[in-house]
Length: 382
Image 1 (cartoon, rainbow, N blue to C red):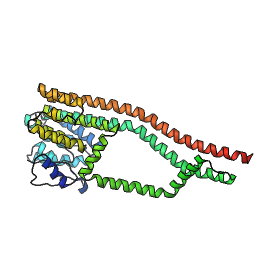
Image 2 (image 1 turned 90 degrees about the vertical axis):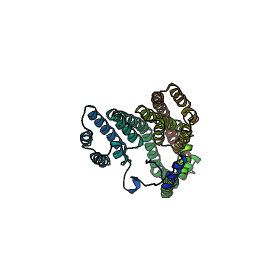
Image 3 (image 1 turned 180 degrees about the vertical axis):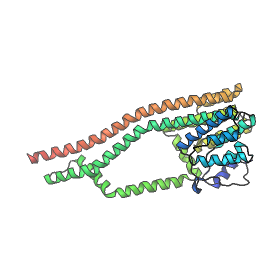
Image 4 (image 1 turned 30 degrees about the horizontal axis):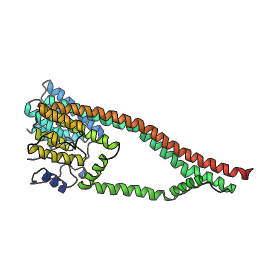
């Protein structure tokens, strides 16, 4: 059996295979971004969705696969273009489409390859490509909604930070010089503001170095799978973002599982592919343990209890009892997508006034410090 796994080191791959009760005969690095390949960007992901839908449409009207791939690949940008050329070459050499895509794992993930393979085996490749395009479009739309929702708060934070920095570096020092010429003692608020201004002006390079070192050290620390899993578990426990992340992961896992089951893939392979689509290592490893339990004859809903939210577990249990697990999984995924969108909007609606209040408090403190300083020199001027 061959396949691909995402891990930071070879040891991480071997450890993951042992957890799945598999023995690794050989572990080879495939298309590692550190060796020259680049991971797909958001724009490449959208281009892949367009390519997939074009191929599916052309196949549905009877156009041969090779011609459909060649036509849909025109105008594609890197790194998608190189991957599509390699896929087309593999198909011309007689390889199945899924096998050719599997060799381009940096573009075509396990979900994509599994859906294409199922479509080829059942003779419904056009339908599989269309469903994949819908899935990619939906994922891109959700990511776009998240980005759009965060643009305004991020812009407010940048403007606020820039305004505070300008005041501390330029406005406050000149104002204090005027007070010094008047020979007046500084009020406590003005002294605090002056101290912050002097510290930022004198030690800005230390702050910058600390930020760079922290980012570098954090990246090195999280390159270890155990540390990354701990960090992912901590993220799930955060008050607001933790619930949002869990809902997103649940929706994606159930969506992938439902799609694969509906395309004709059996439960265990579908679960393995759906597990690989989970980016949070804490949840992914827990799902892996649950899948091992399912392989021993236990019910999926019982094994996922405590890992996924209660509603998702109930929907999975109902799907198992009715024999329509694919339908219930897809319905639950749509429900969590809607819940994620609702929670995101409500969170952003609270975040915007919170940032305004914080910025207002900072500006209010600066104004208070200046007014206190001005009032302190009025008697001397009089």
